[in-house]
Length: 229
Ligand SMILES: *Cc1c(COP(=O)(O)O)cnc(C)c1O
Image 1: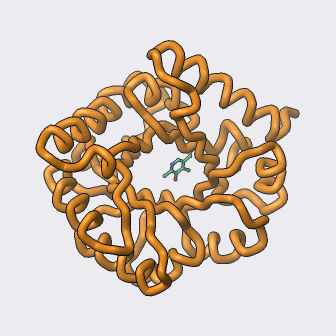
Image 2: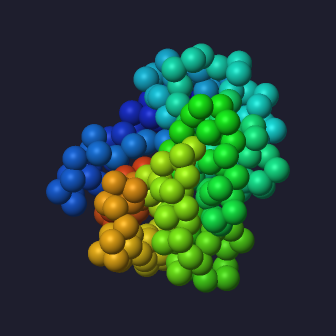
């Protein structure tokens, strides 16, 4: 049985190799440990191994688990956010990866501002057409970035995507490339570079390919914690 600690160092090793292969620095790529469904003991194991950034996908589960975990961990919401749940986010998450409308951008901002906080926000984009459920259309991305920038409770930091599941990671490559090109086009179109620095893409099955295509944040669950059963 491999421990969480061994799994993390294995994933970090693969990140390093993928980064070097494409002439990038491994330090510029954040490993975000996706701890959804995992009990707090497993998450503590990862924290003891030095892991700092963790991602959850459900508000209810986050409200139960996060307060039980040590302070100093940095939490990211990576799952769909209903706007009536945004009020729970400031107490839980420093980062939200799933902003997919101007309305949600304004609601999230309002809730963070109310608490005197600023949310690091990523726009979730559906780059693959109708095959996935959440995420904005590529053509809407610029308006959402602009709204996040204009509001005081949010700081846009980049884009996120979650392509349809495919066991062959090469089949995800075009979607990762599409997200990078969308970012490059937005910057070329005048959106500030600093609001589009991060590309959150790649999971257990395809994070190496995602790094090759420019990922700066990889969201890895299974390769760290084992299968969710
Ligand atoms: C579950 C999840 C992941 C991690 O998936 P693994 O295949 O277990 O690495 C990444 N991103 C999101 C949005 C998820 O919901």
